Image (cartoon, rainbow, N blue to C red; front, side, top):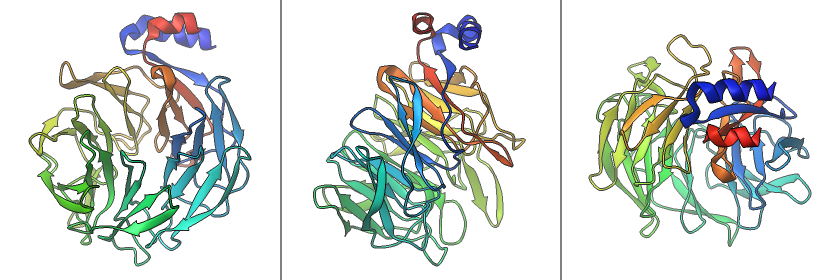
Length: 359
């Protein structure tokens, strides 16, 4: 079956790569999170009693031990000691969860200063982790932010966001600052303007506002290109109680602190992944008809535009997309319909010409 899929995709669009199936996870996962650990394995966690570990060399998953507390829409970060930290994902429980790969076990970790869900979080260049905003125990977005230091295993409060925000993106820039964009504010409206966090001063400053998405974007996807620019794609707009899917994409230029709009397909609960070759790959999500998408799009920085990419083996949304060594991308889990989560996974091969030998 893999041979047939690979040959058909190779003939269709060899230059853009293709997707091939890999083994299934132990449990269906949706709104999950994943991270590449220092040993090269991929840890995936979704709202369930355990996680899954993927071995890229063998192409197989194995279940982890039970997790002490389920999380939904949290953030998973690899740690320097080889483990991982699961942050947020629970608006009433501020505790984090630590993973130990040697035993495939989870344990409670240090607590955040504030419980959060749909928080903005990013790993910084020095290994610390910024966690900002999110919905708190009162179900309202917060302005508070904090930083986790793996060296001490503790969170420290840092500067506050200029405005309450939840459901946005956090992307580290080439100069070490963190761009936070999108999300909704305390009134339930989308926030169209970005903010920038400086790890040096521990403070936030104003960022440029979206060029086209004047009502903001809730749960967009983002990726940083090799040239330092950041693409923010899709999501939902919230304005005066109404919602709709956000069209197109926006590109942030740190040199100008400004945004420019780009044409792209409408997507929500999708992923956007920076590839080793400098492109960015938009995967899955739901479109205008609220159906899972098999279509992908490739942002080509040479063209400064999106164009169609290879199709997924399984249309899905709410999945994870994790970059593996060699330019591959592991796509796992998600929903395949309104009522069905999936255990299926597949791997994107960036160069389909190579896949003939891989096959």
